[in-house]
Image (cartoon, rainbow, N blue to C red):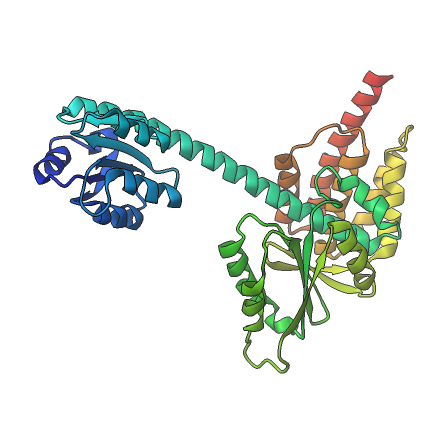
Length: 397
């Protein structure tokens, strides 16, 4: 149900409007009946109202002053102006705020209901648009986090240059034109990592809910980087400075750096990470242990190149599955398969892949707990990509 506030300084009018219309039957809940603009302002904010039916002339704030103040806070709240003053100037000023419904007193029940129904459509249309925007932002954020995790995985494990690795991801990530912030949080013992991630999750969800935040943990150091989207990070600095954990032996310290772009940040960070054998990639503020199995990755890369060469080598598929069967670390196996999936999508004959499909694959991979079941799932996905590649080569020949 949509929430309605009625504001009019004439008691008989506001009570008549509330009592003589069956609001529930048209999907409306009256959450406030106010006698002046100030009371209406407070009620609208207290109840997160969707629609306001307001007189244009009231004590405290006038109807138009009320509209102006509320629109500065939430432009999605819909207004219907009710007035006894048949003046074009009032209507013209109301329209400047996007108000389309201006009812003149006296008006009957049907006129009010017609105006409410019209405004309801605007409310639901706006809700639908906002839900679609949120879903799109969530998909973009999730995709950026998944892609970054995979890119870090490649950068740490591969001997290829950073430039060659990032080429496969340029359609999704901006490596050149967006500034980035990098934080090192030092002396963070592993036993306190979970608590630290919980606090950081709360901070970023509250202050930067749509921002993809990338994190890596190595040897008592948490590394955080993200797009530079704020003129100041004093609040974040104070927040980190206030970290206190039970039985903490050394005080937490941190340093922050600014980079002109993501490419420069990765160029600085990746050589340092390659020194470590044990690396934790943080996904959705949860830690995933990663072992730097360089030899396994080199073999995998060799098999993949054989599978997707101009004249595909079918035996390479079995070689790849045999290699997977020898890996007992399921977290590493998942990371490896996700890496392969991204490489195939960006280097094979695939011409389009949606963020939903990428996210679906990654979520399905993370669902498995048994290595053999995971390998079976991957083989089905790989077969589909191979068949698609064959069809496209046939069509292009």
